[in-house]
Length: 216
Image (cartoon, rainbow, N blue to C red; front, side):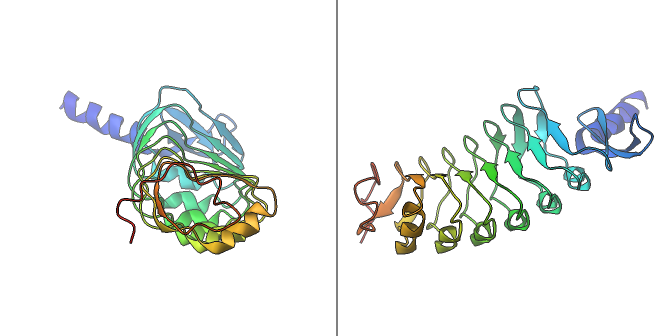
């Protein structure tokens, strides 16, 4: 019986549950701490030794503008509930062990200026909904296992000054409209993928090493 209760407590802490925050407001319990739903606008848990999956209940903290979970040991997929955090301007999940695909719901976060998902184990394609994030200045998806082609919708992100897609398994041709970003002085890194020539003239000298063995 004691072991069963302990298991329930562990599940509650790992996955989030309702609680009352220190300020007396309704909260969500994440990784053993209670965060106010109403008053939590920033959550900086970088290098905090967090393990397990990101609880879907994190999507209840709808006033968050800054979420930083960099440098932990988080596993599993990004919960689609992340799309509820429409006030976010910064989302940093770099240097974890996250898997699965990047959820299309991330396209709901139209206030984002910085999106950092590098150095994980994400698979699947880059969702075209990422083109909705027109306020982005930095998009970093490098050092994952992303496949498929670069969605042309990325050219919608005309405020970008950094686009890092290097060290994935991206295939196909680079969309010509990527030159819209280059013209705005965006730094682009596409190296160490499987992107096929011909490359747009605006970046043909900057595509870096590509594995073109499977190109037509």
